[in-house]
Image 1 (cartoon, rainbow, N blue to C red):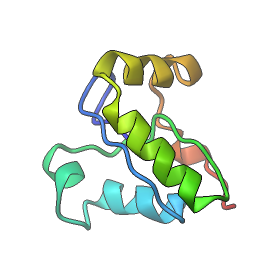
Image 2: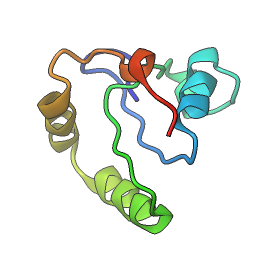
Image 3: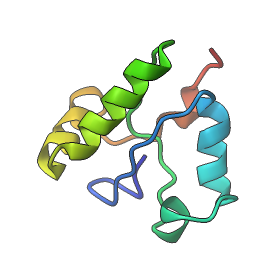
Image 4: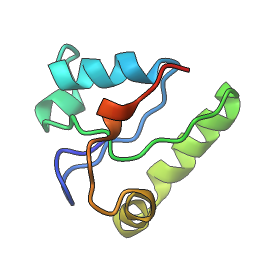
Length: 89
């Protein structure tokens, strides 16, 4: 999630991406994303394995900002909000 192109980034995992994105957009949960207006889904990965999701989240959180930006821009160079095109899994 991001606040805007090249803005504040947030990395997290969830078992329900649609619901979690809506929580960020509506600012219904106190915390980092509400404080910094992080409400655009600019990148996501899908897996059915919770353990691998946790490992991937931890790994990406350790990356420097430049690597995170490269990951986003590889799949979403215009930093479009991808949440409008999400399908339920």
